[in-house]
Length: 380
Image (cartoon, rainbow, N blue to C red; front, side):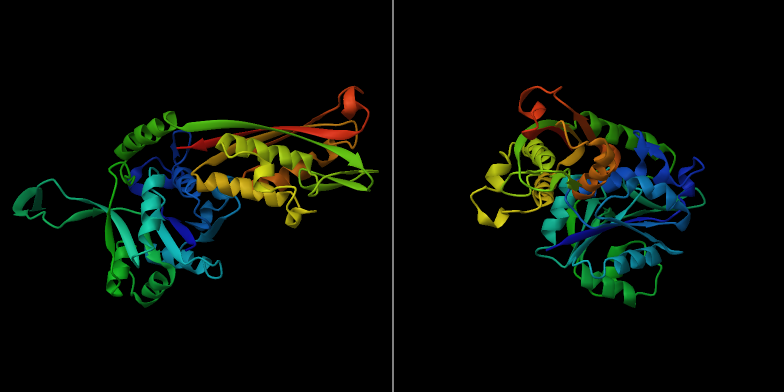
């Protein structure tokens, strides 16, 4: 089942103070909304729809990446969710996780449990049982105790079969506190999953300090892996080479079973190496005829997907291309853009460097091209 996500972040969040909508205030060096988005991307959820106030579209430019969409929200939470649901039409998604952008500390584990629950339930949501004594009060005084049995503190993300929640929202008059309320009004059965204390919703100014501690502690415990890759291809007859996903006119071609893109092959091996997943030849054997002449971006997309499935985010990629000719500099920006698109990264996270071997060795004799690559994988 393909699962998408909607992150609702169109509100103004005035109770949190600071003069800026809370989802855009900085938390551990990044906007609150960026932390929520990263959790879903790290869990392999795509597409992710950001529902934003129209005035905030420019603020979201730095968050946009392949698989991330943005739409304008409405005057109410209900209207914003409906806008997010409409954006998922035609994407092939069968399930959806709906999340509040003011919950930056949602964990990959919780997202995984909700996705698993949709295999057997039409809806599921995380919650924590109320353990404190409850009172009813008025005008600053206690009126009466209130039983706490059977009461839960609701959290997001809340998970639904897409068609069912879309129909429920279409039939609902509006004014619901969350999407579970909309689902219950439509007669959907909602399973309760155990929530997480750290999955707090930032509402008041004091909540930022707690969120900073939680997110900061996770950052300190972050798992980072580095991988390196090396590849070489010799020259043969032809009129172009493929490097970094870009076709470059040249008086010879690189020889290989696929398109012989030595730069992409090195990057693939760097990612596979960081994952402990072997090398490109194990995943795409040269003996398999289906890969003859294949574009190497297919291999790179596979490596990136394998990383996402393991809960890893690709932090950055750096590649050095060693050859006398062709000149790499005029094509570096195009390579950076192509690689960023395939990997789902900002182009600033892609390093393209070129050098010669000063006429020495087989690269100096223009017999072939070498590429060296490094990839950093990050998992919270």
